[in-house]
Length: 311
Length: 311
Image 1 (tube, chains in turn purple, red):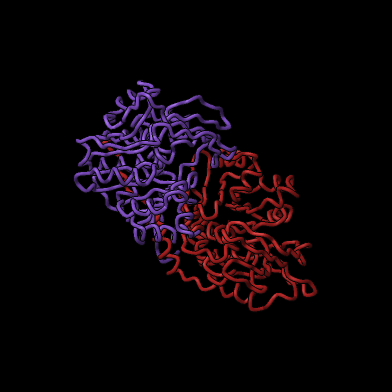
Image 2 (cartoon, chains in turn cyan, brown):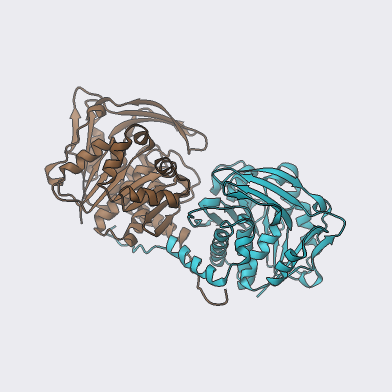
């Protein structure tokens, strides 16, 4: 079993979907990644920053899931990062209503001493320079560094993004962002170009259409579980990444075959995340729930064609 | 081995994509379905109509693939159905430039005598009344009737469409059309509503995102093979349907498990269709090509998660 460092936002979200709206609730990339990875009963630590307005009960929730929170800085006089968004009827697109960086504006992540030799590092969506500074603090080279990013950094900090991409093993990115980053419409060609930018493994997230894993000429496609209802997509991508990184930390196996399984676990966990607002569903998720859904996933995608000369 | 009746257009297409444009070339739903199904070395017949302008070499091509063309009526003084379209840069959307129904306007399909007891009937996209008239001619109840349709008939002949849907087993329809037909965004809910309209099996085609097969509470998701380049999507849906129906005719097995395989064969064959303009790629496709790509499909989607209590 390996240790997992998670860097990213711990935040307040206020969400509006066709099904309802919330006040400020627990959100943030590192929160979703941490809750998802906690399914694997590994040693993990979240590195983040919050303000004095951040409720103790939220920190307690993370601790109760066996997540080390000593790397979450509390700026007593500051306010916690706040994001508010409204989803359209198709649930695939959303408008950002409010973004208040608050304490995140001066975030200087400090990895706890006992996690500087962690084997797996999950860099949640943040400024590429902040992501880089985390890698600078590692005393031994991690076995696997996973990075998530978004179009905002391609627009505002592309050089920094290219630099941190040279230092990572896996990038998770959505389809539109992969196209923006490479100027290529075909995801096969886009993945190859991203590969050349650094990451040996490229995971392209396609939302309700699943996720693709690329490594050299190998491709694996995990469809998303078709759902009756997507209640709130917030955090689904981070939950996917947390499942991916958590599974690798648990198994310690970074082969392509095992990464397929990591993608399946990521997809499975993400399928729960969207069932309720924010972290509600992930908070109560049991390993039994996860096992049952994994079996559903197998049924969804596995087939038995016997190839012979007659067909 | 079962007999397969294919009803649909045999036509001229003129296609423009970002990669080039064609003059009038061989097209039509029944053409693509027939060529695709011919991979299975089954007894199949195409029922259609063409004009006196239709080249003998196109008819010879179908015959050379072991397709019975006695049900293709030749209206010597008429002209063949002609469609022309232009694809946008994303290759997912297209504009229809020309639709000349010509002989198709008065199409009265006549199923050849020796095919009226066919076990599998594939109703390509046509007016629902024309599709119904084919079923009226069957002397024994087919084992499986597959119907393809499109939004045009939902707008112009919805009642007739509902009537023919009560007489079929499998419907193939794309995601947007499934949403239009049911007023439901969730494909799971849409499939359930379509199921209630008649078909026991619902296949929802999602283009580059693959295809879903629904039957009661069973769902199967076959992703599309990620391609470097989609040269011309024309006929991909019909090629999928032809692979599906052809595989069922070959195996004679209409269980859900076997329909999964039919979906995989359909997806595999469709992945070839888009590689060249029109029927070019399907004309030269060998069973060896198909086998190799099936193996690619297996690699793309199959995984080996061992479930245990530690994960």
